[in-house]
Image (cartoon, rainbow, N blue to C red; front, top):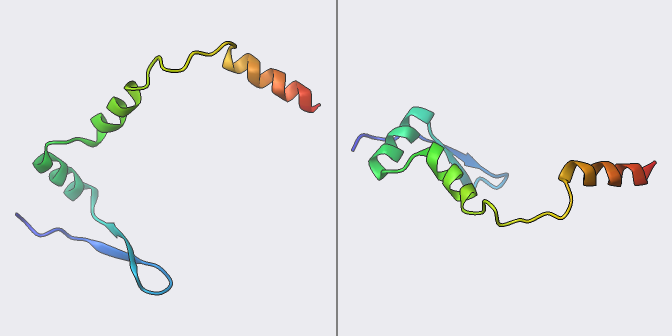
Length: 70
């Protein structure tokens, strides 16, 4: 495995809180792990598709609420 070029991000006390790596290296790591950035988010959202059933159109609801403010 090749070395990963990383940059540590620290808080005010100097404790590491995050790691930054170049995007190309992130893609290489994902390929090695067998995952992709594009697929994971979409698959997670589709799991909830059709789970919410609204009794009112969201735009109509928003307009009705805004009309209450004026």
